[in-house]
Image (cartoon, rainbow, N blue to C red; front, side, top):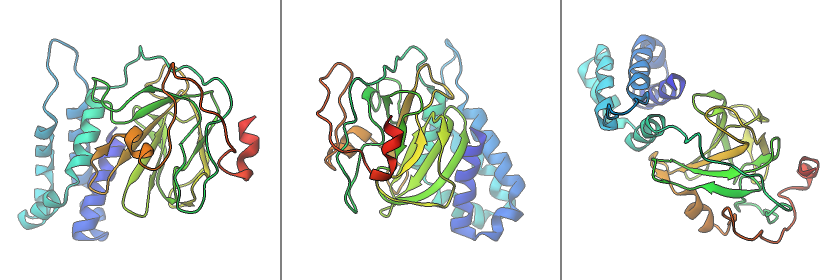
Length: 262
């Protein structure tokens, strides 16, 4: 959790004050990210969870850089992304939610340059919002099944992440960021370019999870969370929900990944 907030703070400082400022403000970055992580820790009833917006006060620690610099940093904050991270951690994944594996073959169509594919085979077991502040969608699939980049982009995170166990995050040409969590293995490194349909990870059961599945998120360039089901549907991609008939299969996303389907 702290690592995710530290990255957000560091990215904001780099964008406003330049890369060297991240080194001179290392202590401030650590203080702010720890404060945010502490605010985001879920609390047990009957104590109510803290309003996420109050966590912006954690950025008072950057006043050490000077008031003008601190104001620049706060003005540049991706508030949507910050609040989405806080909300997700305050309302962790429901451990009672099942994630049944899919029945039948893959449901993808072959990608073409610039197109979009589903991130993995399976059935939707949990949707955006879902009554608990869920910031993405869950797709139940078999342990070790392939996860694909939904479209071209660059990897900005690949490794451990609080709540997710392992995750991969990809930034796309329009600034959209897609997140792939609870992975069993990551197959791609930070800063690597990826193409639509490229295998980037395998479905896992790590982190806050009770069965093999992919947690998939979409955020726009401002950091605001989007409904992944709608986002995919607008681009011609649809996965069945739990209980719906299986969609007739087509070819897997790329010929180079055929062995991953077995």
